[in-house]
Length: 300
Image 1 (spheres, helix red, strand yellow):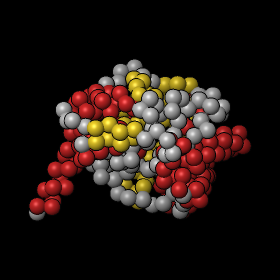
Image 2 (image 1 turned 180 degrees about the horizontal axis):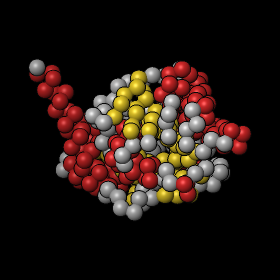
Image 3 (image 1 turned 45 degrees about the vertical axis):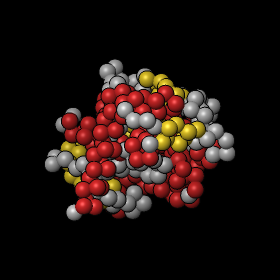
Image 4 (image 1 turned 135 degrees about the vertical axis):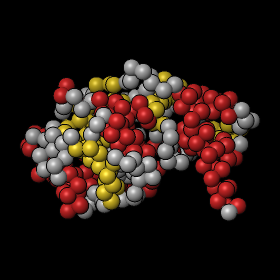
C-alpha cells in the first residue's frame, strides 16, 4: 500500500509518516523542504502543493493521501489572510482534484478543533472552508475522506510557536514564561506520537466519510502546564500572564472551542497514551539538546 504525506517534513506530518512506515506502508513525503527526520524506508518528494503537476505526479498510484500541509500557525495566519486562503484552500483543492483523478482510496485531511469555535482567525476559516469543499467533492465525485480535527498537540519536533514547546523554550532560555492570557485556559493535550498512531488506525472502513476529533484525555489549564514544566526542569521560572489586549488571546479559545456547529464529529482518544509529565520531560530534554548544539557550533 502506498501512502503519501503532504506536509510530511513538519511536526505532525513526520510522525504520521513514521506511523505509516511502522504499519508497513510504502511511505512518500511531499513537502517544500527535505525532512530532517526521513527514514531509510521513506521516499522524499520536494514540491509545492500549489503546483498542480507536482501534486498529480506525487499521488499517482497512491492508496491513501494525508493532507497535513499548509499554514498552521494561527498567529501567522491572522497576519496573512490572502496567503492563508491561497495555500490552505487552493492548495487543498489541488490535492483533492489530483486524488480524484488518481483514484486514491482515502483522503485524510488534517483539520482542527477550532472549526467548532468563533476563534482561530483566518486559520479556522480556511479549515472550515476545506471541510465543506471536501464534503461537496464526496457528494459530486465520490472521493472517500476522513477529517481529522486535532486538539492541542505537543511533543518532539514541534515548532517553537507550538504551545508547550514555546513554554519550555522560554522557561529554559529566559527563566521566565510569558503567556498572553489568564492562565485558566483549558486544553486537552495529546502527544504527537499518540495522535499519529490514531491517524493511521482510523484508516479502517468504519471511519470513511466521517469527522473525528483527536484530543488527549489529560485536561489542564495553561497555568498548570507551566507549573509542571517548572517542577520537572527544577528551575526557578517566573510565570507572567498578560490577560488583556492580546492578539493571541483574541485568536485562541479559553475554555472550549465548541461554539460553531459544523458536521458533527466523533471524538477519538488513545486507549493507552504518553503521560503529559513524561511528554514534557521529553520536550525539556529536546530543548536542552538544541541549546547545546547551538553552543557547540558557536565554539567550533
